Image (cartoon, rainbow, N blue to C red; front, side, top):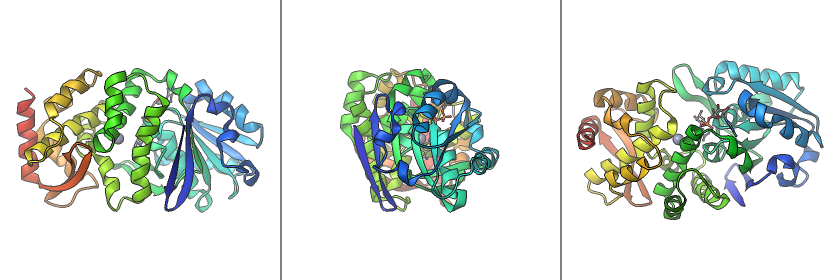
Length: 356
Ligand code: NAD
Ligand code: ZN
């Protein structure tokens, strides 16, 4: 399966399939290796222990390869992780004809992508996603690191030369990480493609066909092709995320998984849409369905609406006195509405009551 991205700044192909990690050059643009002089693979400790030897051997068949391994987890998407990654680039002797390979989940993709965006003012990179969430994060060119005062606050748009998605690597993913990425698959279904939801309804949460992955990636791709730099419809991808970010922040990062937070956020966004008079999906029905996957709705049931509102207002997508909110005008029809702080607070309070 392949999906072609034609973003204004660059076109590239996403290849989805089995065993791609063993022969990456077969899926890179023709002559790609000839245009490159050396590679640096950036990955995390957990992924390295599972896949780095194979990936290294495969790339080393045609080019000199160095590797650098960071600790697993969000902590590597930091100034320190960035310093380590770029120091590794220098030590490996990368120049403007070299490339970085991001092997891992969204953390490695964002970090390695940002290193590639900024090292010598920008070099090539290849995404090799190893998590389900990374079917989303590896596409679209957003790269970056966290600032101690805010997630994803430092970054750049930088599209990869290719995305090689070897789905065999998903077999080792822990269930919790799986559900994390599945939240974004479901989101793509809600905002754009009912067939994604239908297939999910049939197969359940813990298997994903290459076709379903491709369909979910297509949703993101279509939006990125149209609005690479998020001046307009790319914001639809934030469906469920305004509340999710506030829930994650008030719980303390790492307490709640991102997928759980997003699923809670999407159900609330459906409620907001309904309360504003739109004909989107019925939130409590969707909640019952999503619960069968193992998602908990405790975050919504236990939230403190006042604190959550404060958390939302700190989100970078807000304007003073009002919040821009992505809702569904009807199924697969996301729109952005502006809601006043008071209105949102009362919606948070009334939905919390409905969940009791
Ligand atoms: P992650 O990269 O930290 O991976 C999660 C965990 O799974 C890690 O411990 C990792 O070592 C482990 N892991 C990875 N692949 C594995 C495998 N195949 N088998 C076993 N274990 C494996 O987290 P993530 O959920 O993939 O990504 C989250 C990050 O993505 C966040 O920082 C978020 O901000 C970012 N993100 C970016 C975008 C974007 O557009 N750039 C979009 C969404 C999310
Ligand atoms: Zn998300």
